[in-house]
Image 1 (cartoon, rainbow, N blue to C red):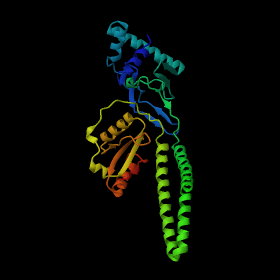
Image 2 (image 1 turned 30 degrees about the vertical axis):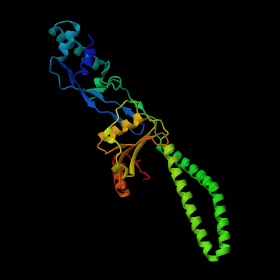
Image 3 (image 1 turned 60 degrees about the vertical axis):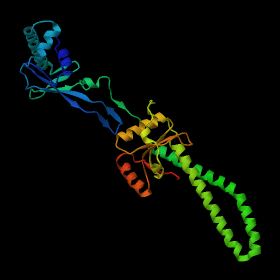
Length: 321
């Protein structure tokens, strides 16, 4: 009778399986582990070790053998004793014995039994079907560099576009002020300088606004992995006049799918944030906010707390009133 089969069966259900007159196989549960050097993930596991001092018959193994073999308890005890005798003889002759799905037993120089468990077997039943896997390395720096490159290209293109559009008005203004300069002398030249400065501020403001929009489009064009769900509209979060007067928002994300945005919003509420979900913007995105604030100082203070504990990439969106 190969009693190691019955020992292995019991190890899934119990922490200690004693082999009378020989020793006990004990188990220990280890939590899931991550090897950062290899990006390897290991599920929770129950490992086995051996204690040769626990030899008293607790009846567990004998009862299990008796039920499995449909025999008496006494016969099972005798069968176990006979198998133990064979183990000891094999150890004395060969110095090692292999127990299927359990491990190897060896005698050292002091004639003590040394046990090496089978690492391929996981006796934790709740981890059934789970196996180690290696995750590909996520290179966040590459994505950030792409965003910077997009920003630089769009900024250059927008400046060129604004310069072309604004070149003709500048010529008209220049012609007008040159004529005025000839008539009014020193009065016309300061007016001309003020007009040029005003037009420059308008161009820079338009460019900055378009750059911000392009960065948002590039940042949230990625397909969101959250699964689509059907949720009821939360009427408690309808935008009020007071909320409109809080134009400084800390962004948690913007989603193509309204359902995914709703799911992210619900998770933030569950985490204790006074979250908000804005309507669809002109880019077809649904922004989700950690919160909104009346002043930039309040928003920056909250942003630092969020970046420290929740999301290092959280940023502030200033909404034009």
